[in-house]
Image 1 (spheres, one colour):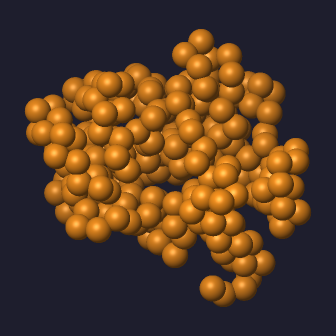
Image 2 (spheres, rainbow, N blue to C red):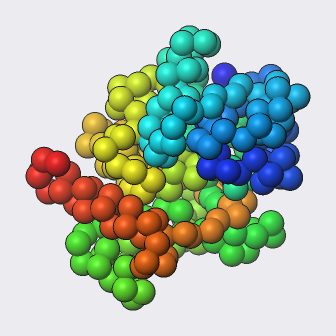
Amino acid sequence: MIYVSTVSHGHGKLISDLQCLCSLNKSDSIRVVIVDNVGESELKEYCQLNQIDYICNDSAKGFGENNNLAFDYVSSKYNPERNDKFLVLNPDVCVEDGVIIDLSKQMDELKSEVATINLFKDDRYSVPDNSVRKFPTLLDLSRSFVGLKNNTIIDKSKLKTPSVVDWAAGSFLMFSCEHYRSLQGFDSMYFMYCEDVDICYRSTRAGMPVTIFPELKGLHLASHANRNVFSKHFYWHVSSALKFLMRKNGIAF
């Protein structure tokens, strides 16, 4: 079984319009769990209508903490087996159930504990989403924040077969349930940004690096609220990036 965790920060209309999660939930191999971070009554009704598991927060939480909440819910309600999968999926990602099921099977074949697919920004799969990267250094982050070339981006067009990468974006990350549990999920000390970098880093240090399966594709309708230097998202991003660099360099925070 594959358990899909999607966190909604007011994305109820998007989820309803895309119909991706509803379609996935119809598969016998997939169970969707939506965590509502803001308490939308329309989203609750949508989940009830489509038999999607629904969790509503009493107060807003970060990306990592919300996905940990979904995993705890899945663990308690469904008691997943060791090779069952836990997929962290953004509400703005569209992917077919067959792609998700194929990924799970290929992970088992390669004994991969954490993986991603090839995300694109258009439905013709011609504009790549920069969803896999190298672990950043302080210089890399500084260049990125001031709008210079980001040297951490991996050219996915050069990847023809399943390949190990440093980290993959939390817009689509699939774990074996046992591995997610062993990592103790995302670190809730981060808020909204870099949780994905951190969990991939910890997984790599534990001997289980991320694998991308480039032949499996999906659509990511991304928006980047952190790009405005005056926004709270930019502050959260910088704060989380500094926390990751401290962890990477052995500094407690």
